[in-house]
Length: 463
Image (cartoon, rainbow, N blue to C red; front, top):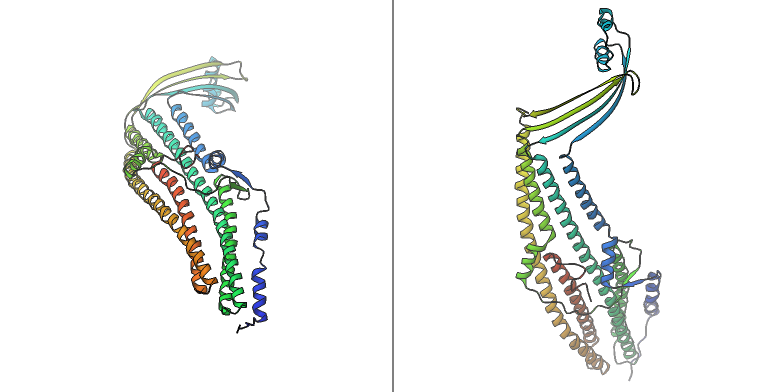
């Protein structure tokens, strides 16, 4: 005899609330803005044009180029011009101004005129020039240091571009994975709905207990929650992709293709480590900074040497502006040698030598860190590649196990717990596979970044 199960009114209300949740409507509300699709090469191209990090690094290279021009300016003569208007009755000023104006007369030797002269106006027009002929090669070394600083900024720009490409690849594949996770969540929701309906039919027919229907309802609610989370993750992944492109997060961008396995060239750990030591722009930058610091030490040593300067001046002094007076000029060569400055130069030399030791240590640290990054990225790629193989093989088995358990549950040969466990295993196998595919591609990009070879034409970027 069939046993009729009575459901409480409260239980029916809970079921209606769960099943009445309109998940697709929530997704449509979140996706109300227009979405623009783009390929990965297009995304990389946009990022290298729009990303503010690259613009900042490019500005550094321009500043370094200006530094070279500034350093070269110390090799050129300096020419100055001045125009001065003065008036006064200072005896020395009046006496000297009359001489410079070439208007001095015998009457100006009178004692009263010398002691209490009448106020005199003077307009002085001056051209002056100095030229450092020799400074113990400090200026030439300054030019070399500026060139090395420019090389360092250029290498930093190259490294910034590589990091931008990696961020775009990671964000792009994150969006691909998020889309795939939405598809998997929708499939899992359909499976959970089928299980819930089957368990409810069996309870109503009296061949299963009420807990089976409750378990089906709980699993259905969980899958609805998974779908909501997957849809929100997709929206965030799109925002993250827009940010990686250097655009506001509100811009809607969506990958043009679907997540899929891609055959990438095989690499060896030894080759990637060798490439990292030879190709990484950040290591080249540190080497340029080391050479620049060596020039700084040489400049500090040159400060102890002599300096030879040439100078010249031409001056016109007039009682009226530009007329009525005379002119004069002077020229000469000066030798300077600092005998004592309280130990400032020796302290400066000690400071530059300490900085040179620091840069050498940083260079060694950067090399060791680069090797470690290559190894970590290589092992991550290798693990993801092998996990893909394992996960791919488990998908078919998990799907077949789910089908068998559905038939067995329908026939009363297995419990709802067995069916739900099979459903979870099937969902997990597909999730693991696609996450491994995502890690393989982003890990490969990370390996190229660690080796210093990542660029817009890398295999992980191009179709």
